[in-house]
Amino acid sequence: MSMVSFPIPVLGNGQGDERDVASEWRVGNFTFASGTEDVTIRFRVFNDDPDLKRLISEGAARIMAKWKCSSTISTGYLDLNPDTAHEDGTTYLSSIDQRSVLGPVTVSVFAVATRPIPDFRWSRQHDDYGDETFDVRTGDLLSVPTDFTFDPAKLYDPQNPPLNSIFKIVKDDKRTKGVSVSYIEDEQIIITLPKVLFNQMQLIDSANLKLSALVLPVLIDAIAFIRLNEAQGDEEDISERQWCKTIKRLMSANGLSDDDRPLTVAQRLLANPIDGYAADVAAQQENEEAQA
Image 1 (cartoon, helix red, strand yellow):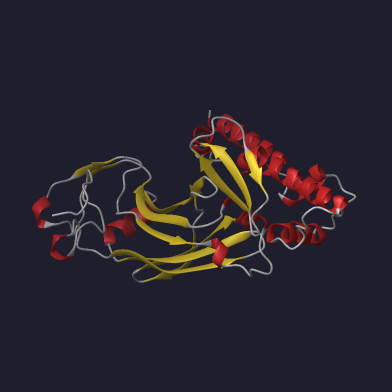
Image 2 (cartoon, rainbow, N blue to C red):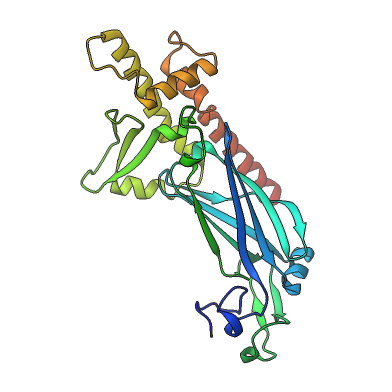
């Protein structure tokens, strides 16, 4: 009956008369906009199921969205804000920090139980289920996840790109340790990681930690490389490379000059990620203590 196997019948699973639940579930009307600091995301969840609406209003379920960007080895959950209510669903608005994404970003939207729901049954569930009820656990999916993908790199003005657009992180299966950087490309600085490190970085949820551990030292090196190239004069001119122009433009926009040390410049351009990570850890500890 269903295209995918779930422990309970879910919205959007199956086709036509063979659906688990005879209600609408789809996600559409995607729009994206790239700002100075964030990528704004708007999408509409089409849903006319009375049971899901009731569960959401009671706080027993919610609509969630998880994003993943393989280029920056980052993932996280969107903070969804209801923007417009419709008879058949809701339009949601959210955003992603520009520093966390580069290249294609996949967003998965789904309905999930936020607390146990004993003896649950859909009023529109397929006849094959009869009057069967289900013990829904916290975290159980109530819908099929719906994915959509967008590329932030295609949203901004190529003459005025954000800082994150100049870095590209790649994996080297042969390399065993250490990080290498290449400045030979015109548009991007290539950061190469060993396979093990690349995979381990994917396990880190904190954007500030990734920026501190990986992007910050590379940006410091890039700024030093630019200054060395300018001082030598007789070497290859890199001033027309897009990544170089982006760094110089952002330095000027932030009131920074070549008199400022590379560490000072890099921290300012990355919005002080070390401070940000320390604040994140402190906030997490406070939350854990408050819940203890």
